[in-house]
Image (cartoon, rainbow, N blue to C red; front, top):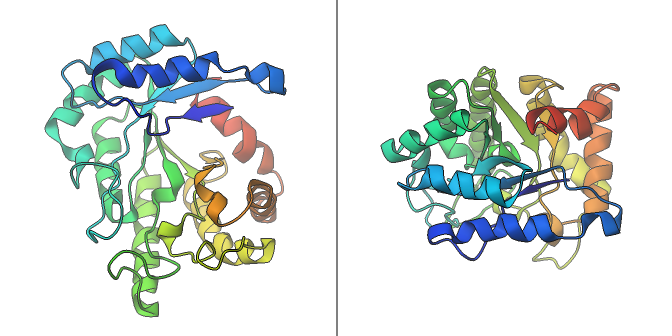
Length: 273
């Protein structure tokens, strides 16, 4: 298992390091599991960013990377996971980001699809740093209206899809970037299953996820695409078993030899397990 930082409650000072300590202390093996890597969080804008990386590494030798979420949407009705709209382009952020390559660490990037150009620029500015795009760049409103009005018409949803497809393809041209097929059933994409108080069936998952995952595989290939669970965030729409079952079918139908790389080998390579 690879743990990806999960908005730990202590964000001030060295408090973020306590998440790494907590994860490292959990009894994975008692449940037949093995912790392969930890992706922690820290803000590269901070003057003590280098020291925070060192503290994370001291907390666990399994630290492999950092995630700093940058998701911020023009629609103010959509939840912002960052305090500015273009975090990855911030000069202080990029100055601190230099320490990742020096420390041999990777970066998990999460943005909304309206910000994919920021990840492209970041990847080109730091070609020596392995970057993985979490959640395929979360195209907000692609399946239905969210926020104050994003995705409210069929034409707007089609525009969101085309914009996402074009920018994902451009990002895939950066050889240091991978992507994760994950989080395709968060309500922010426009799903309404949680409001209907039911879980999506496998057939419904296939309908929504197939064209999205197929496009990701076409862009990144089967050697730079990896599965991630995004649980418990997706559980408002469906079960983890359904997601694994559906996503594995889609990947297998795309390429019968792709299951091992997408569900195992690519994560092993990227996170240096």
